[in-house]
Each structure stands twice: as structure tokens, then as C-alpha cells.
Length: 112
DNA sequence: ACTATGACGGTTG
DNA sequence: CCAACCGCCATAG
Image (cartoon, rainbow, N blue to C red; front, side, top):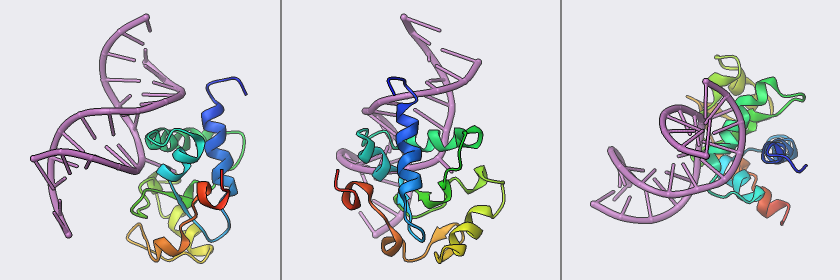
């Protein structure tokens, strides 16, 4: 809403829109928002999600390589991996297995 | 107002 | 194919 945080809300919106057992990439979200080159901002939004007013499945958001780059931001442990495996996603060494299978593109699925 | 940084992506070498 | 650099938009200091 008419404020700079709108960008963040979009990120969280899409993050929550990610189906259970699916993951998306920063670039996909950024592109869906309109800032295709703002992938870094998406990650930044996730960083502040720790103090956000609602839960954000940031564990479903990874980089284009399917690598859990931000897993250390959750609990500094293996929380992210546990969550992903809990959804049926295989994760080994912070790397998502069958990444392209579980990949969920908002711009494609939502067709915006 | 300006500078520096940030959980990345794309392009160039 | 792999490695490195630049660019990006927004937030914080």
C-alpha cells in the first residue's frame, strides 16, 4: 500500500502462495513482483521476515541453483532442511534434490 | 541526501 | 563448462 514496504509484502505474498511441497527462486519472485533484477531484495525481505508480523515460508525460497542459501537465517541450524523434507522435498547438503521438479514459478503458475 | 550492504541473477572472460 | 564481475532495487546507518 503506497509505501516502500509494498515490495516486501509482495515477496511475503508470493512466498505464502507457494504450494506445499514446492519451492521457488528469488529471481522468480522478484520477476513476479516486477523487479526481475531485484532478486537480492527478495532475500533481503526474507532477512527481515524474522521480525515480520506473520509467518513466511522462506524455507521454500531458494536461489536459482536450488541451494538453501539462507538456511542459517532460520535457526542457524537445519530447520530449513527439516521443513523442506517435511513437505516431501529431498534436501542434501543444503541442496534441493529434483529442484526443477519442485520448482514453482509464480509468474507462470499465477500467469501474471 | 549519500554511501554501504544484501538469503542473487545474468553476462562476460 | 567453470570462475569472476557487474548490476540491481531497497533498507539501514
